[in-house]
Amino acid sequence: MSQLKHFLFRITVAVLFVLVPILGVYTFVKAPEWRLWFPENVSSYGDEIDGLFHTITWMVGITFVGTEGVLVYLILRFSKKDASKANYTHGSHVLELIWTAIPALLLVFVAFSQMSVWSKIKINLPDGEYTAENPFMEVYGSQFDWRVRYPDADKNFSGADVIESAFDIYVPVDTKIVFRLKSRDVLHSFFVPKFRLKQDAVPGMNIPVWFEAEETGTYDLICAELCGWGHYKMAGKVHVLAQDEFDAWLEGRREALYSNGSED
Image (cartoon, one colour):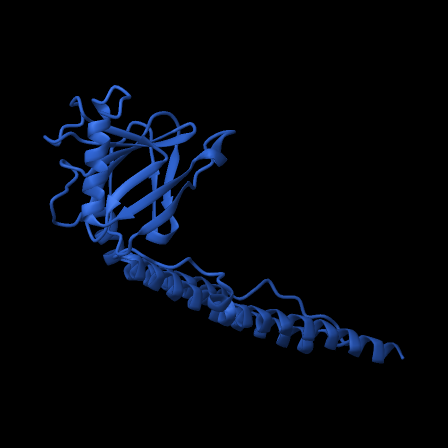
């Protein structure tokens, strides 16, 4: 009877470990339908970010299933009762080299796979009207808000009619928006999920950032770095408008600077 119990225990444990990769793969397959992956991409480089994400997910998934398969085999192979004397070993240098070399090669593959995307997004800013020296806007993170500043008509950020807005950022669609990201106090992180854009705002640094939204709409902006007790408050919006709508909005804000609160 004890042998039967031991056999049933081994089978039960093996089945439970088999169910783990099965459920994992099933969740992976159904994730897009259940909306567990990233939200819809609306930026020009979002597909490249998603491609890297899926590459790494497949690599991790295949490794996970393979590891679980080996684990189930070892459970069934070595959990039998055996009255023979145990054979002790201090390990295998060959095996250790193999399981060190394989992850190292995978990491090298990931490193080279992402170099062109990293260069495109973080290093080589796009050619266009706006540059790191002549940005579309400045964005400041501070405890606990986001503030954006638009230059005056002469593209000067210290002029009289510089527009400043808290939490709400307005940009035109299909435009390569280059902006300077700054922090006024501690470390923050500018994160717009639907743009696949995430960049830390580091105190003392002016960091050039860019994106190109391909669809009009309003998109969530959050701080992805714990920055203090009011971290949860740093929830803004990026409003992507048609070019004429953006021009009208900006002109209206400039006129409001000189209105003295009146409607005339």
